[in-house]
Length: 162
Image 1 (tube, helix red, strand yellow):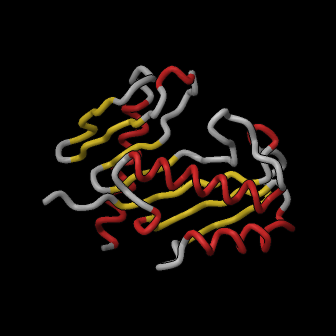
Image 2 (cartoon, one colour; image 1 turned 180 degrees about the horizontal axis):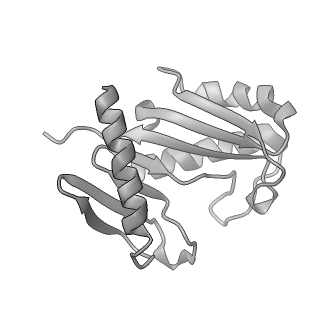
């Protein structure tokens, strides 16, 4: 397992080098090295955002950070609990749109505008991960996109093809 982890890390390094040479926008796949398939996945290529919603590397899915915005792109009201709930709903939507699910999340990184809200965030977070607890890091940040209270990014596995 450790050997697979290091191989994945090396692949991601190669992908980041290759990715710097690709044009942004839309869904695209590139063979970063023999046997490694990479797909850059965007729900809305016209959004003008300079990143993908997710990147699939073989059977791993890496999600960009999500904040608690609704379908109009507006940050939800109600503080850290409401934003955490919306953020996790957004993550669930990206995972499911790309063939994965919350049950397949293995790692999360939580960035909080105020680390003192960590416990309130956890109270919502645990309601989304009921069958397992992904590895997780959390830290306070001096500012998040759109003035958000939380940004959360996740890594998930993909179901094996039959």
